[in-house]
Amino acid sequence: MISFYPGPSKIEPLVGEYMQEAIDSQLIEYNHRSPQFMEMMKSCIKVVKEKLNIPKNYHVLFASSATECWEISAQSFDANFIHIYNGAFGKKWANYNEHINKSVTHIAYSPQKRISLNKIKIDKKQKNIFCLTNCETSNTTKVHSKTIQKLRSRFPKSLIFVDATSAMSGVNINWRSADFWYASVQKCFGLPAGLSVMVCSPKLLKEMKQEDFHYNSLHSIYQNNLKFQTTHTPNILNIFLLKKVMENRAFISKVYDHLRKRGNRVKKELIRLGFTPLISSSQLQSETVIGVKCDPNDLQKIKEKALENGILLGNGYGPWKNNSFRIANFPAHSDNDFEHLISFLKSLKKGDKS
Image (cartoon, rainbow, N blue to C red):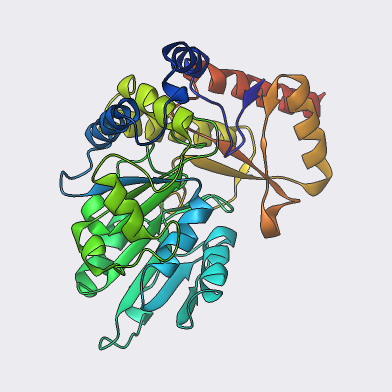
């Protein structure tokens, strides 16, 4: 079966071999303060920064999931959190933050429109943190990199946090445009779930709370990271798999160029076959998750027939649960995977005509 579900999704083809290598080497039997683990973690961070073109003075940290990153970031700063979102995951992040911080501002906008930065009014005397979702997986929109850069230029003293869960390792990110980027590995990294990657600017680490009261405070994670250690026993296997996958992955500029071109070809083919994009403007469509409108009466039939043909399509989400499906366009997917998908969709249309 080819999984086009937008996370967890298809894993990199060689992950099975890498897992066996981890077992044979006994690496996963060493503790997280051992020289063996520290050397492996050091190598992992090095190759992640190289392949994703992360600035040398930015730090790569690990946690268990993108959801845990909500808590880590929320409890590590005293500020007014300004959440700008157009979908379910951005809203969930904002709602969760309200459980920890008293000062949380919601700015919701339509998924069919751009963020209007001119309408954002803040008290510049306060310490403000802007929170955005780079790729809103629920509705398959993206925030253009230029928008984040403009936000940085307009509010240079503020920190910017970005949920990059369906973008990191698939999209060529301008890291300096924000201070805190986070993602889970079960999407564009092509790995099993259970690990998240955080990319932190020097400014962020300077302004975080200097406290270790929480077992996974950002300060504590960072202090351990300086020794290539973690606050607690981490997902050692997944860190090793991340290292191996990134060692064999092309540089992000090449990966992104391929995903973008392939995604555009697939979208054009879908339109040619009579399908309608969930997001009308191509400028707002994510490169890594493709949303397709679908008649509610046909949706279940399409998903069932897809499974019969070895294809797992992603469900719609939230308001689009019953009238759309989603297609992951991640680095682990091959061009042949998409040829099989398109052939299947063509067969559906032929069936309609007959």
